[in-house]
Image 1: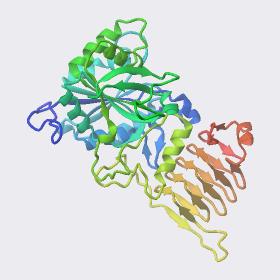
Image 2: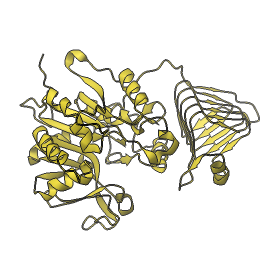
Image 3: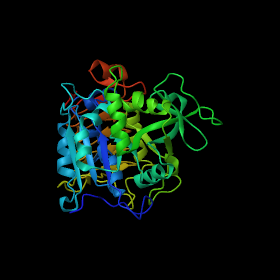
Image 4: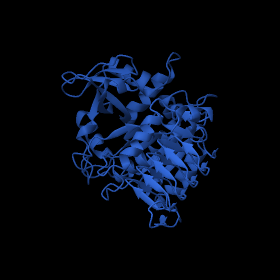
Length: 426
């Protein structure tokens, strides 16, 4: 059986192209507070029944790229379990999604940075012998036809191509920021600087790296070999490898993500991207989902966001008394399978599987993860309740930040309360 995977359409219809995807999924995700106390950031639930990792994996599979290695490290059990159970590809067609734990192949250290993660997994590249390697982050929300980025990379004969998107100057402080010439060639790459340079002619906006890279396989190996020899390096793509490549005069290009066209999208949807790095960004991205016309849609049949199947029954809504006080009702919300809304009211919220909302309670602008129970007369507002949380009868979450903090809950700068897994709120 051939070890190549033929990519058709926009990339190279007349030749086989062997593309290997490597997804960086070993991040600790400290800024997500209690949500990453027991799981890796890419394993955090999203949109009710998905995990964040499902988004990048869906983008690759929908793009016809089906050799995917997921590099894991931090509290990876739930992530590895999810991938093993949900992402079973066709072995007879040489398709796979496989996790690669940190293996200390180059010494006794765990991953020192994103570049070192790939360097320590170099055996994966040598085994597959790809022509191109896509190194993508595992914790972003967006849709992308990766074939178009690969076509741009080949057209420019680039050594590496970086997906880029305009963001506000304030947001750009948390990302790698790039300058480009009129042909899209990167002339400067700055990682997380306090005063990032603005895009010429577009005040207040900076061109940020999305953390998605396309390398020629030989170029990637060469650059990682050089970086591994540098003791002063943090061994990170954004901090070290890419800035050095730009400084050395290599052909490093920026791919304009706004030009990427995904089937089933409109101009309204195009260019949406969120980095799930903070409690605010996680909550805001979920609130985006419940809009009447969401920019990131889970309902695009032409570009399906995939995940594992479950045996949960359909969601159930019960009670509608004449007084209107005891009504099972959800508006502007996502309600997953297995949920029971029993005489409570849900507004602008996301409910994960097997959540139960009891009578006379209310949940507003909140994200409830799997198995949460909200008791009678309880109220939840602008909160994220982790798996298995029980809100006792008459209890409140999200209305008094000081009281929430006194109970040991995290309250973000934007006023979002996070209740840790398995907590009983009284």
